[in-house]
Length: 532
Image 1 (cartoon, rainbow, N blue to C red):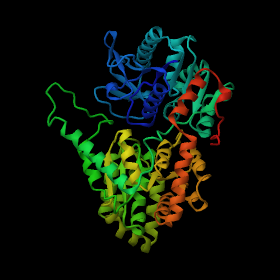
Image 2: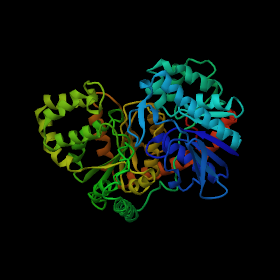
Image 3: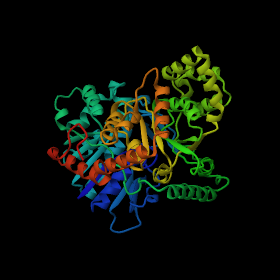
Image 4: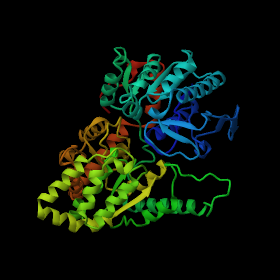
């Protein structure tokens, strides 16, 4: 089959970006022909991409490196303005949240993408199509394809929660895209219910189906300790080569890459060199460095972990607006400065450019420490050591995580904002890493699916509740897992790996997308995770 996919963003860095890259690669492996429209400027760096096209000189030009081209990636010329759901920096482009665009800017963005999709569809003659995000991908396909090609929608969560729900101005575009879709795929029951409430469309539930992301179980798999250590060494060596290959200073005409998605291989390699996987008990955080991802909760919990497991070390992988705030929080821990921690809690989202407002869960911990001198003394005594056992790598490429995660024992998935699916948690579990996740939205559905398979003592370690005790509860679960008897840990790791392999794979996800686009809804799971 020939499949057209509209994503509109990059193919690396965040969950939806990785989703589209993995789906395209899986479709190619299944023998299909993919035509993917996005804004990635270097698609030929990806092995599964055979050709790349753009309209930079007015007309479409396609560069082929292999024939036949099983996957062609096209970059519409959107004129330098990219609407986004969460503010990020993109090299060489003006990325602004959707609500900041005026009507004329939004119209230009839509028109450019509609024209590009229409031209690609006229040439490629796709059999089916996939639109990503609730806005604007579905509306773009509805206008460009004009019912000539059946399509499905994949709702990732960000567009729904950050754009459509808080800003009703975008509801008409969501309704327009959904009306013509054969099926709407969501990562969890939680996202489905949020979507139904936001759109209030009586026809929508009947065509909503479960369509979570997948896991590359061939790349993300458990490794013996020696192999896991070798994987980190291989990752460090690759990053060092990447750093050595970068020019010391950019050419005068070069545009500096100040994108949020930029990588710093030298800094990442240095951070990873600080790990001692033969001695350290590694815990990972992988995700955006945003307060919405709960990174403040994990950093605040770390002294409580190190106090009881001195060999624990935290590796933080990601980028985002709270990177500087995270570093200030760690500096406050290093100084055992409770007042500095309180100031960060009181400033809240102002640290990442948002409105000020107290961080309730972090503040609750600090209030309890203030009221309990013995607990405060223990926390502040452990804090400097704990701060020295935190490493920030910055962003790593998705494939690089497959060499890091098998060396870890646990993963903290601390998002406080609704998530469509816990893809990072599933990837960790595929490596035999226990994911300790906030128990809500799509994260809870992943945790519950894993909990049904692991031995009984481990079930409560997979999730913690958001609330006044969140920081302590997170720390307690990490500590319980790290101190669990070896036999319980072996049995739990085996159950995690088996569950992910049985439930989620990218090829299965890709087949589900094709069924959804063709309207074969009876072949798709309902809104609970299916049995293996």
